[in-house]
Image (tube, rainbow, N blue to C red):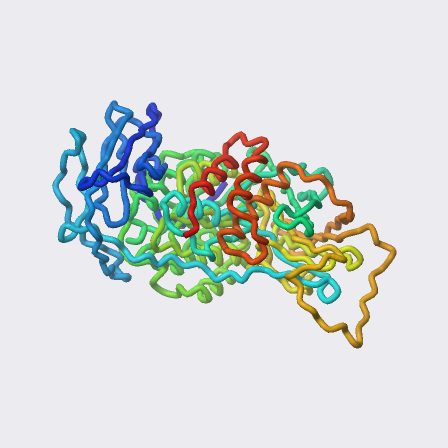
Length: 602
């Protein structure tokens, strides 16, 4: 694999240390009151925990790891783990003073207090200013989402959209729940929550690299409505059968990346990817801050020590000339382009570009032009406080790519290790779906999520229109809420009958609910292929996969305060998810249940 990666990286390393379960209670120094919502971070692994209503926490750490305890309006504390697994901590209350950071230089001057001892344990110095902690203003940005409403079939029988395999919204949500912060509505893309999880879809057996499966059952949140689950499964290509890769790591090393959950985490994450490379693969590294440069020329994946050493040498500082970095990364990838190979730029950043063209529209124009080169794009998002989700998604969507948010090393292992092939190798591009609903069976429908992936109906057969990419082994799940014919619904408004057009349902297909068509192109092709699948009107008994996907959709609607949730409660969502974890070898479904139990909307 020859790889060009544009990355923002800082040093961090793994060891084979013995991990212990460290637990304890966090209280206020002055009144010994239990502190709720304290974020506990293992600075080495970036694993996090949060204190419960009694101030208790539990986290994995090895001897010598540093645990950081943070809570708004309290001095942060850092403690090095010794041999004891019991660690109680007290925090000093001190309201923070907000610092105004120079956006151009992205540098904050910090004065450090001398180390102190807490209960006989060494406490490392923490940044203070005038005896107060520096706190940066939160400038995270999310594009506004207007939830899909119901469409009446007699006026709009077609529904057309692009697939979305991104999972960033889920891991970003997890980060916010673990940090005890309120989730902005527009940070939730329901389809990305659903697609974070794997479902039991069969591998393709035909000549097409994608299989389709559907289930029709009752909507758990509305007994009068139906729910249609559509699943696409991409063909899994074994690692040894992947074509040679030309990869460019595009790494953001600007000042905004100088945080434990940015460059250090990125460094460890990229090591996971490097370990997967073969000698036939090539990797180049481009960095950008106030200026851009090629840190590592194309290097064989067999020379892992050289690649890792180049990553470890990176340091953060300066402004963020993201557009210039993107141009150099693509130029590097194009110069070493492998015909019939896997050519891809991997950009790792918080998305906070502030030099050169950097508005969402300007970045869209730039990346749309660059995708014509045949080079694909993967975006890895890091950090908090100034994270630009809207910009990262535009880059991935318009750059024939995918997008993930890395909040922990476990997520890095999943995206860059377990799902390595799907992340870096595309088996089908410009994948679109178009559904035609039967007015004899369906009164109205609405697509749950995918609001920023909707297409015009005429775009379906237009091969010049861009759509989503599907990686090796990746799955895509979409849910449609359906109002059957004859059901009275508060969600439907009266529309006058058409004068010149009469809609008379055909009796030839009375047992069919919907016809699903999807189109895709092979990675190097310009012409699409079409697959057709028909769904009958028989309502089936739901299985665990169906119910769990429905529960995740309900949670997304709950956080977004959707009018279509029909009064369903958090407890009902938890019960549905908890009762349908089924086969959960990695524990992702169980983690979801724990997360939603711990989150409080207000």
